[in-house]
Every structure is written in structure tokens, then in C-alpha cells.
Image (cartoon, rainbow, N blue to C red; front, top):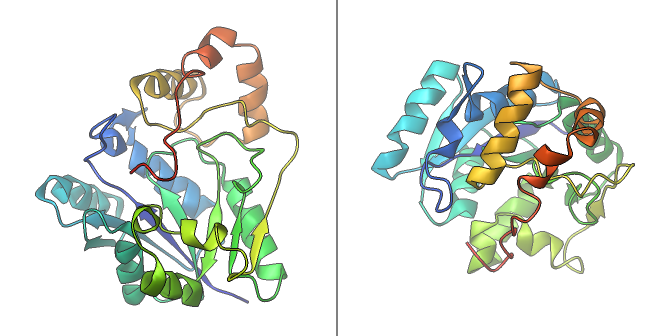
Length: 243
């Protein structure tokens, strides 16, 4: 069976919400919640945080030590290069990519995507965001290790920032599978990129506490919270070409 290493990209230098990955939520950092969800999925052979060599990210390294999670440091702007460096130090058959601004990740979804990837021979890439039905902040993607190394050789410009984007925008070169999970909850935004996002995420954690919440349970609760849902409904997601 394909062994999967989880790689969490984490930096302090976000343009819209600096330092977001180490903001506290119910006594646990945002990064700590991502690490917990990834670990609780039970499908990872290894897990590593990939941060940059920028001095501001020394804080990320300190938090990784506290969390007892390995940390790899690489280029600030070449995130793909950072991922390949992490893979070299933690080699497995495939890489599951996480971003450290998704503190509401659902371990059950992580497990489902991993099982699908492992069940379909010959896949280069699988993702839940090709035809989106999940809220932003709960997506899961896996890329075969050799496919990631190929991307490192051929990808340029914004594709090096978004790590896997060259693969899913060139399906003629890679065997890509888009996974859609029903019902469609893509109207929800559960990622952390702005102060409006932070207000919603913090309200969720204040209500549920320091636990991972299954998406169905979270969506049911939010259905009765229209004021909360509207907090970040107008936030514009950056285009692929934007870093």
C-alpha cells in the first residue's frame, strides 16, 4: 500500500493575516490544530511541517518543537522547492499537502481521500477541490512523490507557490482524479486568511471547544447561524496567479 507523508506548509508572513498560523484557539495554536487533525486521520506514515528560512519563521520552528513534529526549512517563495526538500528528508510514496491556515480540518475527510488514492492504481494526483463541494479550509490533496519531483523540474512562476497547481492544470500530463463529496457545502468558507475568517473560526471553536468537529456536525450548526456565515461570505479568494 502507498505510504503517505503529510507536509504542512506554515509561514508567519501572510500578507492578509500575519502570524495567523500561531494564533491561539482554545489553548492550541492554529498550526497545532492542523497537526492534530492530520495525525488523527490515522493514514499518514509521517508528518512534517515545511516552513521558510526567513528569521520570522523561527517561531514556527519553536512551535514544531513544542508539538514534537519534524520541521523542514526551505525557500521563502519557492514553496514547491520547500515540499521537495521535506520529501527528501521524509521519503514516502506520496505527499498529502496541508496548509497551516485550516484549523477546522476534518480527519474523516482526510482518511476518505487517502483511502481513495490508495485504492486507485496509477494516480498522480487526487484532490477534493477540482470540482469543489467542500468548504474552503477542508480540502485534501495527495500527489505521488515522483510526480511532485517532476513538477519541481518543470513548474515555474505561480505554480511554484501553489505546489501542485501545474499537475491539475495539465491533466494531459498527469493522471488526475477529482473527488466530490456530497452534499455540496462549498458556500461555506472555513479557512483562515482574513480578520473576517478569524472571527468565524474563533466563534466555531468557542462553541465546540478544543476538539475536531466532523463537517456534517459543523455545517448543521452553522445552518442556524446566519450572522456567523455572513461574516466572511464576501471575502474574495486569491486567484491562482496571485501569490
